[in-house]
Image (cartoon, rainbow, N blue to C red):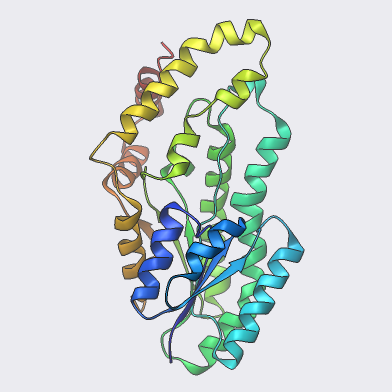
Length: 287
């Protein structure tokens, strides 16, 4: 039986490379997209079915899962990679509540709602196979370490790590593996957005702009340095790691897929907060 997988946020970055790799490996890939232009490029890939999917809209989730269910029939769904994610960067003093809520809608509630709707398809798969279905939630070391000006993203990733651990127990009762996979800082479009406070900056009062200007400039410098770094993982590299995880019969629940993810996890466990905060204050020019 050909294995099947649903990948959200498959239009670019990690999602796009993962869809491409799994299709090359013979999987039946359902690639979630929101923009019609992205659907055209995904449709060119062999074994890939583009699925219009906005994880924040219940009707969109229901339509997508119904389409997948019809396509798979009694075979069921082998794997779900909850990859779709957004960020919003702003000084907390001027952070927009609606935008912060939307980050939570995509990064947390979208994962919960889509996964719940996919459970019946995964149970179907399990009825006919010895290797069991699995859910991979793309997390981040931003879910174990808070960062300046990144409250919305931090909150969502702290939440999804906790949710993943709870899902591990609950879905384990259904023979569905749950994996919390951290890719570390990766060269994707999201990287630039994670340090882009221009939208928040433009709506600040003049007093706020004057106070935070040096910090915004520092974020821009950090973003440029990150994009030019050869040490960061690429989406292609992360896709290869995800393939290994999804193929493993009994994958470990927590997966750090890049060196920086492993380092940050180690720092969080071993280093006092006063040291960590000093490091971040230096990085973000807060001293």
